[in-house]
Each structure stands twice: as structure tokens, then as C-alpha cells.
Length: 173
Image (cartoon, rainbow, N blue to C red; front, side, top):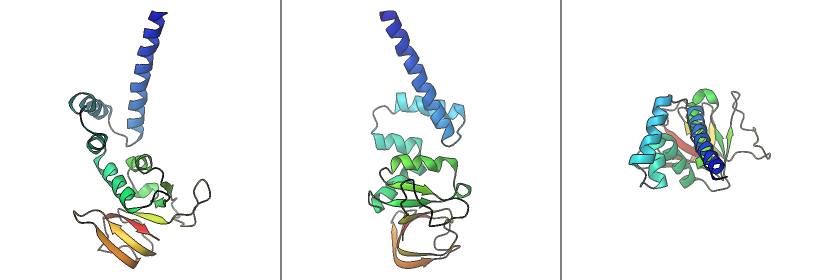
């Protein structure tokens, strides 16, 4: 009985590590060697770091963006995310970090009438790498790219706009 329990424990550990690798490869398509290096660094050299520090070291861009979204949106926010052609594959991991906010990934038609799983409409748009590329009337815009976040009130955004080109932020409709 004890041998069987030890065997099941080993299988559970191997499956957990396998699932971790599968998830890491699927969310950002990173090479297997990079994933192994990250896992070793996280388990051995960074084991005493806080959760925030670990996430910043593993996914710095995505985690920083998620923290800014959390800071500038209420928990019941519904956020339109860019279509897949505007973002890298790792952006979808942000939906994990921003919960309970609801992301709605737009399709290539970019219709702001797209509804979420429960029929909700978005009340925010993620400004990300020149998206949105259509005119948007915003009650406010928060840019996160600089060391001092910038806020714009009652603004119409029509990209390409040199003030916002290549920036990241959140637009409140």
C-alpha cells in the first residue's frame, strides 16, 4: 500500500510538471529550454521572492500590463482586447491576472457590439500596439508606458495618432 502511494505521488509530481510545461509552451510559444530555465530559476534561486516578484520575472510585460489594468479599472469592468493579429500569443495570459474583470477578445471585424459570454458589452478598450485603429470617443484614457502615467479626459482617439502610437493604456468608453 505504501509503495503504491509513493508511486502515485511520483506520478502526480511528473504530471504537474508536465502540465506546467504544456501551459508555458502554449501561452507564448516559448522554447522548451527557456521554460526549463525559468522553472529552475523560480524553484531554486527565486524561491523566497513574493508572488508579484516571481510573476514580474516570468512574464514582465504581461504582468505589468495586468497590474495597470487592475489599477485603472473597477472589478466589474468588461474590457475589449485587440484581435489576435495585433497581439503576441502571450497576451491571453492577462485574463488570468485581471480576474474578475472580463476580457472580450475582438475578432478581425473589431465590432464594439461584440458581447461577452453572459451577453455583456465592454466599457473599456485596451490600447495596445496601435489598437484601436478606428475612431473611439472616450470619457478618459490612461497611458501606462511612461514612468508617470498620463490621463486624458473626454477625448476622441483616431489612430494612427502620434501621441498614442506604440503605447499601452486603457480607454474608458
